[in-house]
Each structure stands twice: as structure tokens, then as C-alpha cells.
Image 1: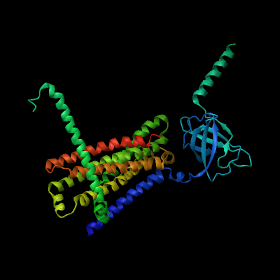
Image 2: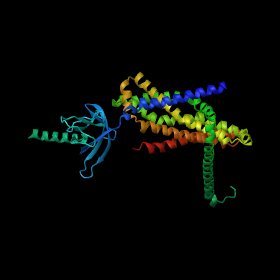
Image 3: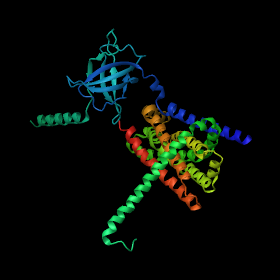
Image 4: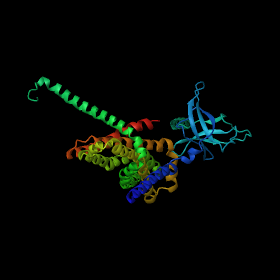
Length: 159
Length: 269
């Protein structure tokens, strides 16, 4: 009897440690806390080029993460890329003339959408569209333009 | 037979050998599935005699605890060390937490824990059941109208399925702390960046939940192979040794093969 009690206790401890490890993995290692607040409202933003933006990329305002990109698709009529942004319900006062930019975190980091608030009194509601957007900077284009303008500048110098 | 074989018959003989191996393989596979179906029928008895499962969790899970925790710690520490050496070249040593956590949760945790489990607990299960068969304890049970599949095999099988995900979770958790210890403690990675980047990159559903599913599947595969090989032992001492070897080899191969399939299904975005 003592023996079986001992075994039961040890097995109980074992299962508790296993569950604690799972709990630790979900709370401390993964993004459970940010997952919980994932329900929010959806707004859209149109871009000519979204660069390396992905689903689950962060949406930031003044550097603070206020939502996530939840869907990306092509508008079949205009061939624009449409990004659906799910914004936390806490941030329900985004002005209508807010502009969206796609930036890169660091030199090689992932891309995110940065919202710069405008000055309108009316706020974006669920399903609203951000009208002022600027596209992702594609590094190759930038280098191409730079080389082109450099070459043009050199020619001018020669003249 | 060999002497009689005309040279023209040699290819036929090769085919015959191949066919024999194929038939043997599928026969064993089929027997394994029928065996499992009978074990599943014993689940009701298992629920009624939960005590049997608890004892088996002790011998299968608790006794594997130490080797799992120590291996997890060292695997995490090595990951931290190697990852740091590579990442520091790109000035990205802050991503060490991401590297350690993702490799552990997605792959190394379930796979290495399952391999260790196959070596530590699977082989013991096979040897135990094989010896029971060899010494005719299983037949004795049948004589007493106790179905050994329900009384012996089913509790061990259930205990293995319960233990494996827990062991894999412990492995991953301890491994993350091992990586933390080396990265932050010894190599000077920033404490906050280590955890925050990790939390940013690791997803509960995509990474952790899928890791648990993996370890669950591995638990089924390894325990199934172990109990089946034990029950299917040729009842001699050599038979037991062969069965034990087969358990370790087959279940390791099964784990690695299943891991590839599961990874392809889960993480192809």
C-alpha cells in the first residue's frame, strides 16, 4: 500500500512537471499574451507593392505594436495589393486621414506597416480603408535609381 | 535447391527472396494493426483499472525523466553555443532565443525526446513483455481468462502515449533554459532581447501546439512498436534480444520518417 502510494505521488509530480513545462512553453516562450488580444477590428490598406510584408507582420503606430496583418490579397480590378490589418479594439480612434507606410525593421529585419495618424476628427471604423499609403522600398529599385542618378550626375560634370 | 538452380533461374530466385521479404513485412504490418485493434478494445478495462496505467507511467515516464532533462539541458546549451557563434557574425546574436526556442519546440524537443524514450523506455517495454511471453506468463494469464492484451499491453500503451508529450515538453522547456544559461549567462546576449524576440517569433498554435501533436504521434508510434515487438517475440533468449534491437531500430526510424512527414504537413505555410 505504501509502495503504491509512493508511485502515485511520484507520477502525480511527474505529470505536474510535464504540464508546468507545457505552460512555461506557452506563456514564456510563445506569444500567448498577444494572441489573446487578437480579436479587434479590420481595416484595409492598398499598396502598389508590399515588398516582403507577410501575414502576421506587425502594425505599429509610433513604434508601438497595435495590430497585425491578417490577410494579403490582390484586388482583381486594380491589381493593387490589399492588406487587411486587424487592429486591437483598444486603439479605436485612428483618424481617417491616417497614412500607412511599409518599413523594414533594421537593415535585414522583417517588414512592418507603420501608421502615421492624421488630424481628422472622424475615425476609421471596421472595414474602413486607409487612403494615403506609400509602398515598400525595394532595395534593388533604390540601388538602380541611385546608380542611374549617379551616372547622370557624372555626365553633367563632364559637360 | 541452390545446387539445382540453373543460371537462368537465378533472377527468379532473387524475385522469390524479395517476395518473401515483402510478404513477411506486410504480414507483420497487418499483425501489428490487428494487435492494436485488440488492444484498443481493452480501453474500457484500462479506464476501470486506472491504477495499472499509473504504475506504468511511473516505469515508462518517471524513470525516463532524468535522462530527458539532462539531455534537454545539454542540447539547449549546445544550441546556444553554436547558434551564438553563427549569429554573432551577422550581428544578430539577439535572435539566439528565437533560434534555440524554435529548433527545440518544432524539431529537437519531440524528436530527440522520442529517440531517447525509444532507447530508455521502449526497449524496456519490449524486453519485459518478451520475457513474460518466454516464461509463459502471458499464457498463464490466458488460462485464468485474463486477456493479456487488455491487462498487460493496453495500460503500457496508454502510459506511453501520456508520457511522451510530457517528456517532450520538459525536454524543450529545459533546453530553452539551457540556451538561456549559455547565451545570456555566459556569452552576454541581452536578457530582454532573448525573451522578447523569442516571444515574437514563436507562435502558440503553429509552433508549440504542432510540437505537442508531433510528440503525441511519436508516443503512439514508439510505444506501439515496443509493445508489439514484445508481444511478437520469438520465445527464446535470443528472440528477446532481437526483439529489443528491432524496437530501438524500428521506432527510431519511424520517428525520423514520421517527423519528416509531419514537418512537411505542418510547416509548409
